[in-house]
Amino acid sequence: MASAGDHYLIVGAGVFGAATALELRKRVPNSNVTLLDSSPFPNPNSASSDLNKIIRADYGDVFYMKLALDAQELWRNDPIYKPYYHESGMLYAESKGMAQDFLQNYKSINVTPASEVFTAKEAKLRWGGVFRDAFWEGVSHTYFNPRSGWGDGDGALRSLIQAAIDQGATYQQAPVSTLIIDGADASCRGVRLEDGRELNADHVIVATGAWTSKFLADSAPDNKAIHADGRIIAAGAIQCSASFPADQAEKLKGAPVIFNAMKHTEGESIPPTADRRLKFNYERSFTNYEPHKSGQEISVPPSQNPDTAWNQDVPQGLKDEIHTVVKHTYGDWIQGLKIENYRMCWDAVTPNQDWIIAPHPHCQKLYIASGGSFHSWKFMPTIGQYVVQMLLKELGPKETTRWAWDRDDAGGALPEYLPSRDLKEIPGYSKS
Ligand SMILES: Cc1cc2nc3c(=O)[nH]c(=O)nc-3n(C[C@H](O)[C@H](O)[C@H](O)COP(=O)(O)OP(=O)(O)OC[C@H]3O[C@@H](n4cnc5c(N)ncnc54)[C@H](O)[C@@H]3O)c2cc1C
Image (tube, rainbow, N blue to C red; front, top):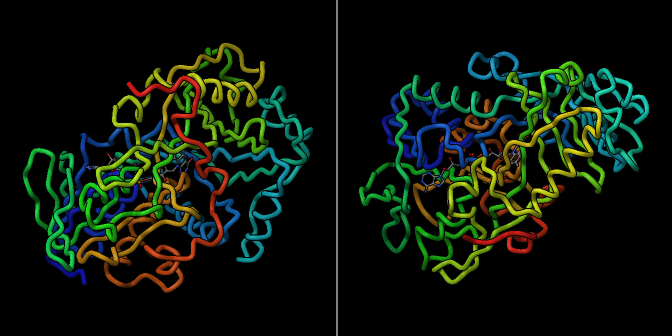
């Protein structure tokens, strides 16, 4: 049981780890909290570091809808997050009934959303006609929620980590090699850094995102009970950023986030940043399975840094896919769009996209806070509360069950993003 005066080591300073550090210092003021990551913050290889991310409460799973509504209140009002929040609205162009599910879910929790459903034709006339040339073949209707938007990725993450430091947490740039797990009954004493130093703690929280499965297996190669064993899988998705000439800015003024859910596109675009950059995502994610010394194959983010941060060097197959998203989103209407950068962004995916926020059942003093599953950045303002509730044994029964290490994996918060192929199958991929 966690208590005042304890030393907590948090490995990983993405949203899970950083939010936990801040909340721990608020809830357990005498605690000694150390947040570890391998670079100065924000780490450009983390999923949480980005140009921007979508913030919405429209979920097909009412459980996360409620949590996202809570998070959005803090995005709008808490000075840590508010400067980075842009309520642009979000449009879905779809035909699979997402709008129906969202509206039904709002009804079930007695919330009246500001959303509207209209035809594709009507949507193409709105926002100054920004989507007039979009490729929306097969779209049966559109759904628009003006209360959704996006957040400035690095700005918000930096603000959160700084807030944790201001509250008394320590940020240490230190790549962690392994957990230190002692004894036959497995108890985590701390971590071993890559430079060989050891850091001891009363509690170790693993918030290592896409690196989690490998990190656990590296830490105890011969103790299979410690391994994630399919509970968390590293998956990547392709993104790109694009600039546009100043004379096109007027056309994009007031544009919402757009998600084209049709099979021919399955991608999103986030409206321009102040320096005129648009971001695009393609939803079809992929694994990267590699042999591990424990004898298993584990999906891991590629080890070369440029493979996980923004760069030019991604496989041609992924470039082709994201170029299609760009083309289908705005067609010829936005002229002079120039793709500047690409990125394979890696996240920790669970089979039903539920988080794992739980004590490790086979290792004392070890806790897992991971499983972002391509949808969890928006919970930056609240996710630390859930992790600390877990540490203090205050988490409600429903959350404890859904976020347990072992659960039934029913349902799915964002099944569209589940990996369906491996990086090695993508044209143009070569492991350098
Ligand atoms: C393409 C893409 C688009 C997304 N879009 C959205 C969106 O629009 N909206 C949304 O809400 N969510 C979105 N997400 C999901 C969201 O970004 C993630 O779920 C969330 O950021 C995961 O946070 P994390 O803290 O678990 O992991 P990360 O942010 O990856 O952080 C893990 C950290 O652990 C560190 N680490 C790992 N191993 C070690 C070690 N051994 N030693 C030291 N440090 C270590 C890493 O360096 C990293 O900084 C998206 C994700 C992707 C990939």
